Image 1 (tube, rainbow, N blue to C red):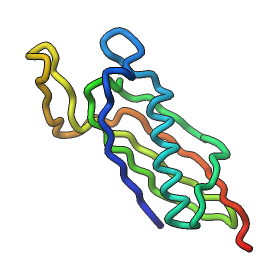
Image 2 (image 1 turned 120 degrees about the horizontal axis):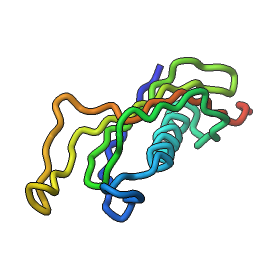
Image 3 (image 1 turned 90 degrees about the horizontal axis):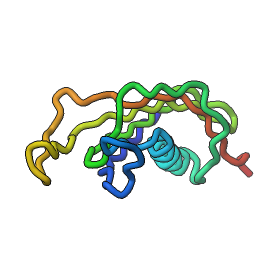
Image 4 (image 1 turned 135 degrees about the vertical axis):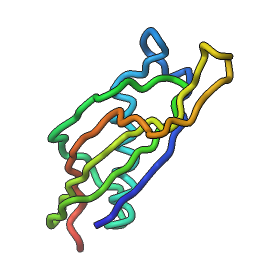
Length: 124
């Protein structure tokens, strides 16, 4: 099976709620990006998302975070691929210390997990 990872900085322009919180849809969009790469690597096509079976928002994502997004294929059908997703916060801003202060989180915080299904076109 295949695993794909992306890393992303969350800009302050994406903060949506008090405390510089980012909405959950932000991470779901990142899951879509990493799923697209999975489909390209496996099938030479961007594929399409068919469904999510489970989404768990486990910890907040904030502006200034650096996220690791991981997608791991766990099942392959004729045209479908079931993927487990995990978003981890690996660095976090510390604005209470100074405007540009940040820290590496060890261990990272698991912020969001999901299971989803993508489909690709039939092979010619």
